[in-house]
Length: 383
Ligand SMILES: Cc1cc2nc3c(=O)[nH]c(=O)nc-3n(C[C@H](O)[C@H](O)[C@H](O)COP(=O)(O)OP(=O)(O)OC[C@H]3O[C@@H](n4cnc5c(N)ncnc54)[C@H](O)[C@@H]3O)c2cc1C
Picture (spheres, rainbow, N blue to C red):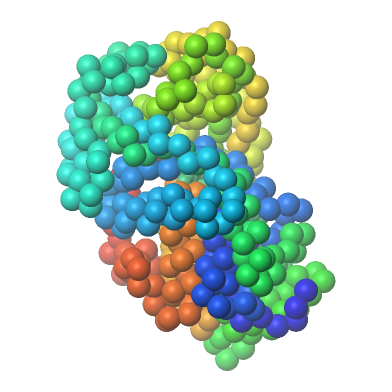
């Protein structure tokens, strides 16, 4: 382990790995990523649904998706790593008039940003996904360019290429303290090492508030449990089955190998680091899932798990410099849709650190200061 570094990144999920890669690519070789887990990808990055979409309600999230999609398209060539990007489309199904109105506005905004999404009728939904029971559905939205990616491929690509470019990435290296001197970051401490550094990036996902506490900065990110189940093979399941979301039920499905991956968010879940499977919630989830997608009724569950969303008060990430301590940065709080924004966010963080300011996308709406100023643009399309 080096005992000095230009930049130390706390957390080796998609945000930490992508930031390290983009810093190293820009020529900043003295970068250290410290990951508490014994392996990379044991946090949210290894436990998510792999969905990638343009269909957001805020301009900044649509732009983050556009930048990330371009990078994912080039990933296999540039990074020598397959990521299984598949454009199966995202189909939002709506049963509330107010949601349909909001999604109409979202589609207009997405179209203005060049995204090929559109509003669809219930009949069109039934044609796009005949496997789904559309009872109660009054309309929805569809974007054929949305899809899926392999989270592990994406993470591994950034880790191996950051290393190739000279960065140091370590597992089993929990950060216990961030030392500050004269109002600036001075060093990072693990149980085995002390690394002197002038720049620290908090990329600890759902654990980011605890890193802020180390330096007296309040970071409003709550860990919220979210559950997923994957079925065994479902005979006759078509390869291009889309990513289907029953929005008001926070219920979703997509094809995973020969079966279906399904999740349902519990919007009453309280903040905690508990990642055991909630048995009561799982029963409610499976009952509603089988109603919406009847071919699940006969399917066997082959895997189940719970992970943590990293939720902010406005469901938007916190990106950029933290003004209270010199040399302190944050890239966290993506509120359950961060995998897809990892590629873009790492690039923007590298710009923020090396050029003083992220410039490819204006990240002002995502800065930490918004919580004090009260000016925040929340995200409506949260599942
Ligand atoms: C069930 C579920 C479904 C999801 N579905 C999607 C989806 O379809 N599409 C999508 O884009 N996103 C999805 N997400 C969200 C996505 O997974 C996250 O937004 C993203 O992975 C966040 O990445 P991260 O790097 O910020 O956090 P993480 O991957 O959690 O990485 C943070 C890392 O910091 C480490 N750490 C914590 N404390 C310390 C410390 N003191 N010292 C050192 N290291 C530390 C942790 O061990 C962890 O590895 C989903 C999430 C869940 C839980």
